[in-house]
Length: 201
Length: 406
Image 1 (tube, each protein chain N blue to C red):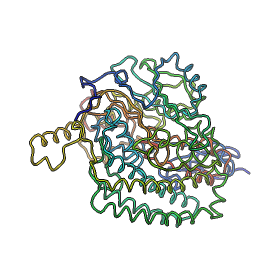
Image 2 (image 1 turned 90 degrees about the horizontal axis):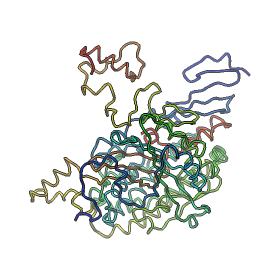
Image 3 (image 1 turned 180 degrees about the horizontal axis):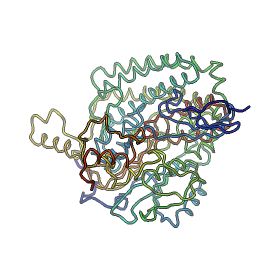
């Protein structure tokens, strides 16, 4: 028996967040980049003591292209005992970020937990957090090119897009002068050119 | 004293006067896998600590975007490989919320989910206790812990078919009812657990060497813990009684009786005690859930949009066969929207922010990995302490790198 709550399924949505049904998972707020810093300070002052998570989503067909997504947690003041904790509040803050000016203010000075989370969003989406004390790649190697979680980034990595298996034996695909990991884009395309002289589109 | 005569090695990155930069890991046994710590040390005292992660980055979030909703669960289980059932549970809760079918999940399926989530918590704490013991030189604890864990993995295998990544949870319920004989094995385990837990406690709790290594080490104040986003046993060990099972109940946890063990000291020993107490609370939950499992019933929603027809009907009905084929080859679609769902995993608040664009694959699966945030606190904890204490701190924060790096 299909659920009556479910909306009809049309085509694919380019802005799924706008199509969201009311759900009780968190309070939801949307803010633009210009007002983000002020809102973050406001949320901090409101007693949201924990920045639960900070992530991003890429909507290539939408303007602005990215959403930076914050989840905050507010614990009731007397959080000393299990029976007194009451029901905390969760807040989701979404901030649209344009691809040509992918910069947002940092939240590290308000919540330390934003440190690695912001580095990760920078690493995987290429969104710059202005004022972050140590903004560098965290998951990918430091010399990696491209932002893997963007929708236009190929699933299997940049150099593997053309053919699933190279024509030569896998063991010999490291050329002299490449780092041991052989993971840089130049290194991988160099190997590919050598094996397959046809120009890469 | 000067280090000028010590040659540079792969471990000793640089030296300048009285301080040197030491690279600890990623192969160091105390780093539980693939953590690298760049420690600036003065003698044996850590001046700054900069953890390097990402050695186990496998792009699970990206992979999940390219699989069907049901297939994505298989990679998601591999994030926290010590608690696969918690990961899967959190993900299916998020998807069910997007589908709007939370109310249709049968009672028995909920009970089975809670059962496995709690078993997985005990098993995960067993791994933590065993490896934490090894970190501080108590080798024998490891064997007792892994023996107990093996019993739990046997149950997991009986239910889902695999020890580590059973993929037993399903959107809409669980993949099948518990097999014949499962409940007898469960009863045997429940009977065995209290004695085993007493033994585990007895091995370390009053051990003066263990106490010496952990009391007052890696102390977090509640304010610091909240600032760093620390959750789970590490947060409860500093006196903040936040547990997703109580704060945002799911799967019927609000109908079960259990307490939240808390401590106020906030040190490695307090985290140890909280986890031990938590295992006992999990046992309490297991006993209550065991009673619910006597009642037979469905384990999967009868919503045909997401549930494949029962296997028995496929040989008898053409429609069922077609339906089964469609569900397997095309998956199901999820209405557009975004949702955040969280469960209390063994390491803390495990959350998934899932976005659907209306298609048959998740548009985005953002994980809130508790290990990442807990481990981050090490940056604040380590400076000013001895290298040997940093080992204890890592152990007591219990990071799992499949989840930190994803």
